Image (cartoon, rainbow, N blue to C red):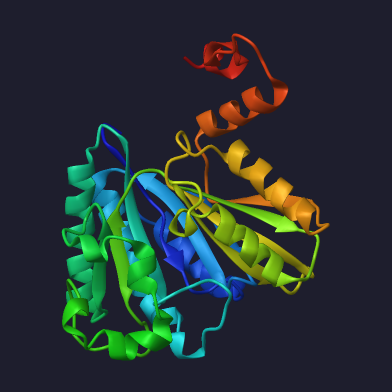
Length: 298
């Protein structure tokens, strides 16, 4: 492919394997698209699909899976730990190869317009696709959640960018945008006290005075009897994983709590892992051409 776009739709369904499988199949069936990964989480009640492809294929797959989500997921019955506003909650497009951010903005607007007009789901643009600075941040759009949007959508400042100006009870609203690569990385703590995870999340996230390119929240993983610091790294080079991991470890030790594991949601650039290895192994004069696979496939 000359041009490659990545798309990472997030759905408010992480417990029904058949529904998630149907969403994945919808993506995989489109020519010009490659399915890269998918995850589902029962506590968050959320699934994430990662795929890439040429511009036309990605646009078709994104709309098709949005339509399938509107058929399968009913927000009136959805409960979960993760903030959400719709069945297809977030739909970001990311430039991967020979594609500009402006092109991804155009893709987001085209797909968002179709979702609004054809599926009758209110659509809000975010990040690079949003011209209004008050509506660029995902957390600002999602504030109040699905339940709060029945009144929020009536406010003059929250008229949808596309679609009806009334809430879709079944599907909620969908947030569509264009952004740079994001790493979704979670750290699990060996305690059932969710207040500890929330305090640590508050200490490290940018909105509370922490790391500039980090979003974080504390989550209770009831099935595992542990809690989680759930994070999004919006610039892993300026806010690296290893630095945040060390702060979480130090903060947790203050409460007598250990880290018991971590998880990646979706995919991660190799450089983020190389940087982490270089930091912890204290390797001198390290360069990426020292990695054998890089030499073989260069």
